[in-house]
Amino acid sequence: MLVSDLIPLIHAKNLTPALSTEREITSGYTCDLLSWVMSHGDAGMAWVTVQTHMNVVAVAVLSEMACIILPENIDMEEESLAKAIDEEMVVLSSPMSAFAICGLMAENGIKG
Image 1 (cartoon, rainbow, N blue to C red):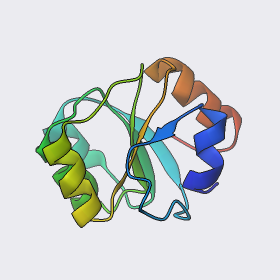
Image 2 (image 1 turned 60 degrees about the vertical axis):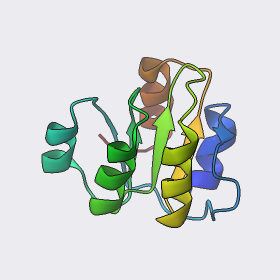
Image 3 (image 1 turned 90 degrees about the vertical axis):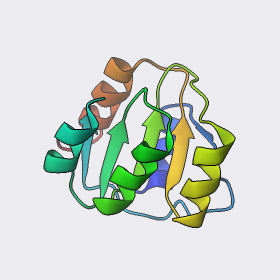
């Protein structure tokens, strides 16, 4: 599944619309402890988190993730979004809960 396919599935708003959403999602993950995500993150991962600071972008870029997903219509700070754009990391915001987002990803073939 591509990030562009995930957007309508989770009713997401693309907070970085200038970036390509044609990255392949190979797995999904939900966690808010950055050190844990750093040790378990994988390339192509769609990461669901409520964290919105600059370090989230750094961890996602370091792990070569496909995108960051913020549940429950959470917005990201402008400084963090600017960094995401500079690093070409797509950031999505969905009205759904983290649980519901992960459930839909799993139902549609994205492994954990």
